[in-house]
Length: 402
Ligand SMILES: [Zn+2]
Image (cartoon, rainbow, N blue to C red; front, side, top):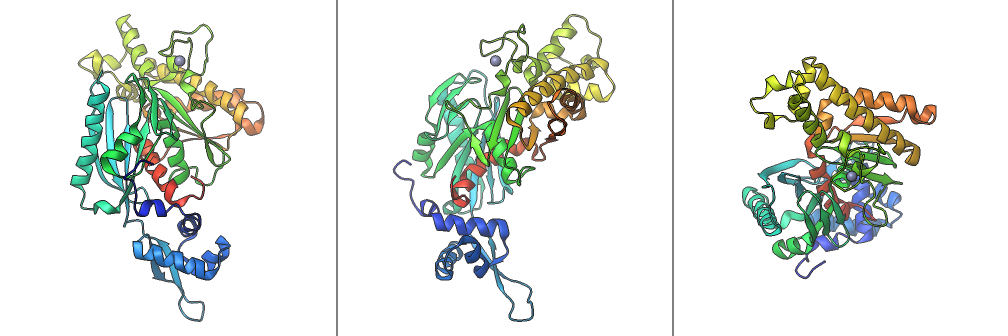
């Protein structure tokens, strides 16, 4: 942590304090006695920590139902007294949100990121957007406890560096250092697909699972892996680069330089390029009637055409779905996860992608249990990476081992 990042947030990292907070978060409303039993701490230790948490407004008291005697005083998290800034750096859009400690979004702004921008231009947009959030909120500045960033590409989360952001062509950008010295707040950085996976474990459909894969299928494809309850990053931070899993030995060239990657057959960019290419070759489809300019064709338009029964639009999603099913089958055979969660723009096509995907798994996974692996669409919608960025900061507050 750089100089200048001080204050109460660091104190929050005390082990016992995180332990107590986490029990209150998961089990609250809960009495001090039950907290001390579950934490294995003495009642005076718990009382002291709780007193501190009450003074800071992290925790609040309420009166519980009586079981005959005096009504018990119960503790719960005061979710609306502190706030976190979450940032989702998309390929063409930057979104900055302010949330409470339970992912309730209080403020949200977004700015377009110009194609071909330089690092300095990006940093200017990023920093001014964060200032904008500070100015637009009525929350006290000292109540904002940290900034989390979800960034595409390869990220060194320990150093807080964007090692390689292929869509922007940025390398070794020390985002954490730059923002910590600008704002004096702790900054956490993580790959966007991993953020999406983390948000599922905090707020989404994987709150009880230990082994999950969350696949973001947008313009690019990436996956976040949670193994035994922990984010798995691999030796060089590239675990989960599912978009570059090779699914066709003699396939087309990919942006990464290889051939036949999943990205070349199932990403949002591929779907768009394929549709435009086929229309250029004279393919008859409703898609063309839904736009005034071919440049306006995107996943939403293809989805609209599919909903109206356009055979070509349906076949495009079907093909993408089969390849995604192939990728999921390979993941199931390698990792045998509890659940696979699908998110990102392409998944807005719903059953048009989901049905062929699940059909592939039913036909090709190894055992009956493998074929029955739970595959679900994320319920967090387009906010999942941003909420994951928020969770990076929450992990620091609540988790014993972040
Ligand atoms: Zn590739």
